Image 1 (cartoon, one colour):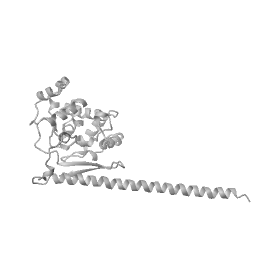
Image 2: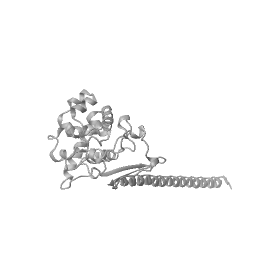
Image 3: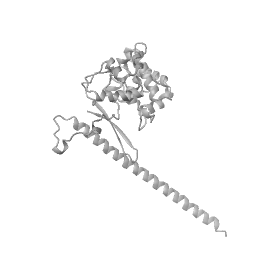
Image 4: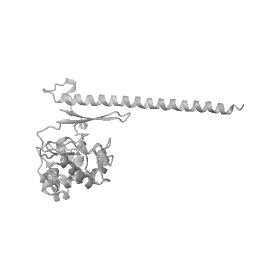
Amino acid sequence: MNILPFVFTILLIFAYTGAASFQKYFASRQAQSAYIGLRKAERVLQHKTERKQYKTLPGTLVLRKKEKTEPSKKSQEKKIPEINPACARLNLFPLINEGREPHPELYDTALKLLQLFYPDTPAQRLLDSLLASAKQTLQNTDALALETLALKDKTLQPLYYRLLKGTKHSDLFSSKGYPPLIDYFKIERTPSQICLFHAHPHMLAPFFGTKTALRLYKIVHQEKKAGFEIEALLTLLGDPHLRFLPPATWELLDLKRPTHSSTGDKTLLAEDKKTGISLRKTLPM
């Protein structure tokens, strides 16, 4: 009797068993790593939440003597926020309510934003579909959440969801990733302008271009002014092309120093660096 087929069969069984065991082990390790990363991201997010809520409590913060030190130059520099706040988002409601013709500058700015943020997408088709779908959906509500919108053009829906979410990391000025659309558009019946003093540089780019937007952000947060006049701002920026912006485009921006804070509903981000798992939470303040 030839014993070789029997031996090969046993070896094959051992090989399959070993492969299955290794696969199960690696899957278990991945699940464990993902769970630990999620818990770490949750702790970071919880810490950020508590800090934000603590800052809203009434009263004056009293520091111990050793904490009363002069802030370093680096700490005095204005850090660019992770998220463009709600007060600095482009409100599309006038386009939805009255159409494109009465608000050409608002339409053009929204289209520029899409073309700048997402250059390889059918920006105009996406914007027109978004506005048409929102008009059909928005009835008696005061605001419409972008993430709940079902586009009339179903072929654009997967793309729309990807743009709403954005990439985990994005920097428009170094062509890294793309920003989440949910942080730059909003739909609210209450009239609003883009708050210059709270706007992320990405939000300023469709108006001023990428290079000028960064310079403007630094100027705004270095100058201790109550606001800016258009002529004074144009002189500071030194870009002659900006003088050709239509007056109605400037009306989309609030150039006065705001009396409101950038809190309201505050969106926070947290990430576990080791696993790359990130969490996002909107916190009512």
